[in-house]
Structure formats: structure tokens, C-alpha cells
Length: 527
Image (cartoon, rainbow, N blue to C red; front, top):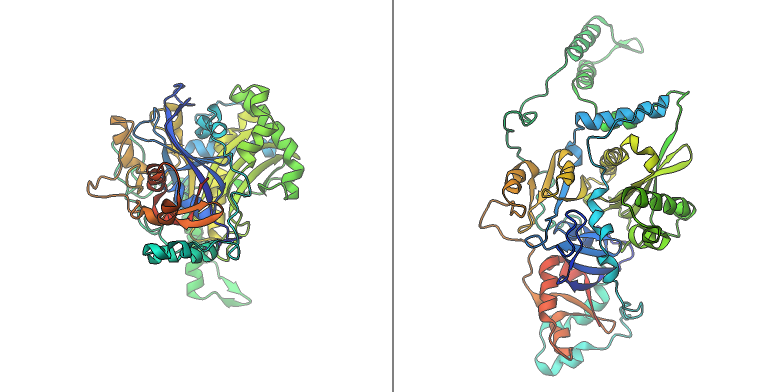
């Protein structure tokens, strides 16, 4: 994938020794994670990081210490192209249609949790603010090639390696990061790989290996259409339709009657002229340079505060404009456009739900090379009867499918973390088919295979191949890229220059967590 501005990701790693308050079990210090501050980040690097269990809250990027944290958080993704809405999902979609067309406000309690709860721990604890970077902007700007000191001259008397001589080349060329979309993501199965579904136990839902049951009404409709096609003289400007076209018409009528309704059938339907309400969904880039983002900022920030105080019981000082900006508007992701990417480009966006000219909900999302990643959702509590959490998740799945038409690699919807040890967080497993990320080998595993393991133990390795290892693991520490005194260099050079105690253990930990690929592309800031 072609990188937009060509700037590399720049991060500061903080380790993960301290425990924080957990938003799930309310433990004061049980929430353990590694963290880093992302000054800037390419969308390809962030894609690769979330495929290794990382996740962002504002510019703070964290990875739970899975075998130690109180509530293990497993990255979950839904296979958007194969998603089929459940009965309760369709109820939510129908409820919205009734409200828009007739103004119907039947206040039925939703069976499912809203899609925002997954980030509750990030809101409830203060780690993004404790760990904020103190580095100045000038320290984070690599020197231009003309001003960079000649590292190779310094090294020439000490039997330098080719890697060290190449520092100058790294400084100039590698700033043009170009992450090819064809490069496989570590631990990522081929996009065409089939996901094998284990047959369900009796009473545990539909058997996915058998064809869907058909309603008598649909069978009658199909027979009627077939009869119509046989009896009708299909003419096109006086001539009969060719056999192939007749077959296509028949096939088309069959598929229409056979198929269960998709999300698109509900959200793309035309409302009657006398509809009581109008709903418009707008995609706005998260940037104060964008006129739509700028003009709707105050309304959006006010809605965030109303939601936080009502749903999460925050105090006004917990959810002011500064908190809103740091948490949901500050993003490290650099916007990028690629020829084979979506028209809106990659980066961070607010998907605003405008009802009759007023924002009633905002879905914060990241559009990445292989997925749409849900960051947060906040909505007007006065409209909670519309189950906006579930409704927005379904709209985001439909949006992922829409983006896939232009960007073929983009076919997953990431829902944040699945926390099996917290019963109220299990609702995410109902968006099927979905996969969980193995915390040891970073390979995706169908959720049906993971649930029995999680019933036995809150921490579990999902990859059942005992010999399998993390394919993207760190292999060469010396190749980790470092930004030191505004100069880009491999760790092997930095190590010789560094004065004071060794920081090798810290760099080793960082590189092991981000993996070899990201450690060679991203710049690790060293003061």
C-alpha cells in the first residue's frame, strides 16, 4: 500500500510494570498492560499491531498482559462479508425503520449490550494521561539527509558491518515507508482461507453445515415466478430473450426469494414520502482542518459529555472538551490514500448519525488496510430506545462491505476486545462468523473453537498446534530502528553510541511485543 506522506511511525515505549483500575471487574490494580505513546503512526503499522493484540485510546497504544491481567482481553473480528444478522439484530433494524417512517417509539429493553462498552477500561482508568509523552516536537523530527552526521565515519575504525554503513541510506530512503499490501500480515491467514465451523451441540443454534430452512411463503413465491416465466413470452424489442438471459432472470428471482434479508435490505430501503423522521449518516475525517469536523465539533463534544455523565456516571470535569479531544479526536494515524484503497482514504473518522438535523450518535472508527476498527460509540441517552449501540455496529458492518467493493483487501470488522470473564461483554460473540486472536501465536481462530477453552480458563492459547510459534516474533534485535538525537539508526549502532546504563532489556521487550516487521519500520524514540 502506498504511504501517504511517507513519514514513519514514531513511538515511545513505556513498559508495563504498574497495574491500573479495571473497568470490567473494578479491581484497583489488576488491569495490566504494556503501553506506548504514538506520536505518529502509519495505518499499515497500526493494522499489524492490532493483529498482535494492541489497541489505541487516543494516541496511547496498549497491549494487555494476557496471562497476568485480571480480565484477559482477546481481539475479536467479524468476517463482515459473511455476516448474517440474527433475529435480535433484525428486530433492532426494524425498530429503527418503524421509528423513521411512523415515529413509533416502542421502548423495548435491548437484549444486547451497546457496542461501546469494549473501551470502558480506557475511559475508567487514567493510563492514557499518566503515560503521556514529554518529548518535544523538535526531538521527534528526524534530521534531513544533508544535516545528518556521518555515522559510518564514526564506525569505520571499529570493523563496521554493512548494516552500520547503511545507516545513511536508512535515514534517507526508509523515511519513505511503503508497506506493500501484498506482504502477508504476521499470523494473518490468507483472506481466501476457509474458516471451518465445528458442528454445534444440540440446542446450541443452527447447524451451519446444512442449508437454511425455507419458508412455505418463499417456496410459493418461487413457484409463481417460475410459472410466470414459463407462460410469459419474454420479448425485448419484439424478439425473445436468449436462453441464457432467461436462465439468469430465473436464477435472480430464485436468489431473491431464497436469501434471508441482509443489513443492506434494511438500511438502504427508501422511506415513504410522509416519513416522520430523516436519518443521515455522515463520515467525517478526524481533523480540525476538515470543515465538517470543525463545524460539528461543539455539538459532538456536548453529546459526548451528556453520554458519559448519563451512562458512565462521569463528572463534568471528566468529560470536558479537553478530555473529548484527547480521547476521541487525537489520533496518531496519518491519513493515507491508495489507488486500490477506499475513496475516503485510510485513517481515523467520526461516523455521525444526524436525525432531523441534529447529531444523536457518533461512531469513532479507524479505516485500515484490512478492516474497519471500532474505537468508541457515544449517543444521546434520550434515544436509547433505538438500541443505537447495536444499530451502529450493524451499520459499521454494512459500511465495511461497502468499502470492500473498492478496496478488496478490506473485509473485516474489528470490534475491539472480547472479554469472556466479564459476562456483559460476551454479546460481541453474537456477531457471527467471528474469530478471536490467539494470544501466543497471533493466528485467528473461529470463536466456536475458543469458547470451550475459555469456559475452562479465562486465559487460553487458542492455537491447538503445540509446535506452532509466533511467526512474526523478534529475530534480530540489532535491526530495530531507533530515533536518537534526531538521527535514525539501527539499534546495533545506537547501542555503541549510548552513554549510561544499558536499555537493552527495555528495547528487547518492546521489539518482542510489536514483532520484527513493525520494529524495523517504526522508529523507537530514545532521548
